[in-house]
Amino acid sequence: MPLLALTLLACAPKPQAPVPKTVQLPIGMNLAGIADWERGFPFRNLMWGSRKWLTRNATGESPWDTGKADQMPVDKDGYPIQAPFVPTGGGVPQVPFTILPSVRPTGRYLVRWKGDGQIDVGLAAKLVRQSPGQATIDITINKPGEDVVTLSLVRSNKANPIRDLTVVSEKEATVDLAKDPFLPEFLSFVKPFPVLRFMDWSGTNNSIQRHIADRKRPTAYTMIATGGDFDGTYGPKPSPLDFQLSGGVAWEVIANLCNRNRSDAWLCVAHRADDEYIREMARFFKTHLNPGRKVYLEFSNEIWNWQFAQAQWMLRDKAASDGAAAWGYQTWEKEDPKKPTGHPERIGWLFRRCFGIWEKEFTGADRKRLVRVITTQHSWLDVAERTTGVVMKHGGADAISPGGYFGPDGVAYKAWDAAGPSLTADRVMDDMFRVLEANTKPWTEDIGRLAKQHKLRFLVYEGGQHIQPEGQQEKSYNPALGAAQFSPRMEQAYLRN
Image (tube, rainbow, N blue to C red):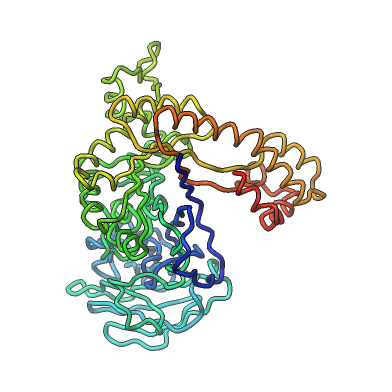
């Protein structure tokens, strides 16, 4: 069976040497989410990694963040339409500000914008000079990902507000950001990978995307993804600004990267997306990806994983319940009609609904460009079998894909606690090889048999070592876990995995 593994993006503090063009690895790569602290920040424009707006009192005396951003009028791209602004309901005038990525080198940067207004910067940034529509700033980074660079909209004329804001290195001032938004070192990093997975770029986990009108556009001020619980069942309901910023990186940027890098796109569809959203997404990527590029299609991410909002949503979604029930599956407990059951069957229906919409767009010769992927739990065979059974009975798929992680089990944690600070990297690796043989191997063989049964390709959507202290706590044995990351035996563990 063909095997494609996608591993997690691990970006080093310093860019690696460019990879020769002739080298292409037989694995794909997950791209880390966009955030101001992420070392693997991919864009020339620092604004694309800026946070959701924060606010402070325009009077000068103010806490760090007054929390009034959700009471701030903004345009379709998330830019404030006036600064300072008076919050909804009145109060002290507010100045919006954001935090820029602090993972680029120390140096001089150019801030440029359209409209009538003034900006200011602070903390790790210093304003050098400013004129209409542009400013020069110096950024000093001592601790990448930890230093704080602020940018404030001190004044923005409501009749002609600040918009199209960019922050780029002075050395890159002449680059056309619309055509070439990516940092050269990022392009060197992704060059060897024939498939790129955009789960984190798209803010898939806890996504609040639903309608096509809400999708992120390349003109948005930032490419971060905001998420949450859509209807506020388990926490505060997202604000209108949250909905505007959800969705992560714009589809245009994703297509640009895949076409430029000659990579296929592994796309995750937001769990709340309605039929129109899913249909328009299919049409967009069919049209905007080069004809030779494939789409690996996944519905959401780990929709069986109860830590994510999409899993909780799946249990209470009426469409999933009614759809699976219409196919003859039980979705509510007989003894308690309000208690959901049959989550593997619900998941199967959700996958097929998504696949079916895309199939109607990828017809004829384009059908070969669509790879419908059933992602499933590695260690819970019953869920994998039931979900796959539903999908294959009601329209089919092309591949099955478990995660490919390995990490400590209860036996290892007990031994590590006993060893405490005397634990060694070698002992950690001994336990990893034991776990690979005792747990990972039989789980993988089970999914492999399931793939063979249904004549599906076997892919791995994520994978790698998951060595961490129990409960992610501070443990006396933690230094050994860190040392194990650099053990020469780790390569063999990955190969065996």
